[in-house]
Image (cartoon, rainbow, N blue to C red):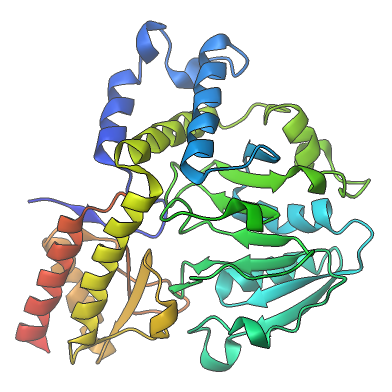
Length: 359
């Protein structure tokens, strides 16, 4: 029986990536060392890191005036590092509140300056993205922060906001590399790796050069993007294993045809699952149709008393990690790049059979 892992993160990785990592685990390309044993300043690992960055730049068409940083601390650490590095002489920043991760980012930013919540979807339980025309943006804000895919709520942006001269900052943790992105319309993009990039412990940050000089004077060196950029993300020992695995994922994505090709696959998978939910009288998805995430699909059963049986049967069928986040309950299927179509087909088949017998 095949097993399919629908975890929201740490999440499924491409099978060829895991296989290659296993083959190279004890002896990377004849070096006699595991990547985990290498000096981060040795020629072997320097080559790994350089190729990972080059492949990422190719995948996302990252312009030359943007730095790519491989950091630690997760996206959550960046909730603090963003105001430390970007507020500068500005008095406040704009935040768009679309769910749990936006909420956490807002909370941390308020430790360092004023936050203007320029738009919020709290009025409908964070089930949509507020229309851009309703945003109350401050033209003097240091930046505008968005979480462009709320992993818990399953809400995704399918547009890039126009914030004028104010830098746009996007937390793309749970949908980065799932489709093409216009990097040039952003000041900063950041993401925890453990969903669509690689193992937990690595954080990716892409920042425009001209924003690196805003950092607050009392910011510790290791938290300064400029210092990290000046040292090629090696101000201190970087998460070497995470960078290596990320590099293998980037190679895999290029082999699949890049982000345009993977976006088509992701759309096919998401449409299949949402159609199964919408055509059912047992299942429901709470998100506005135009904002339904292609990566994280939450759904509920008509009677929550059936939840335990649904999950038990799913596990027996090899469909793992479908329990929804503790804050919202229900179910959640995360169908990242590495989730094959056959996995979504198996889930849809199980859902139909469960409804037939239990619904």
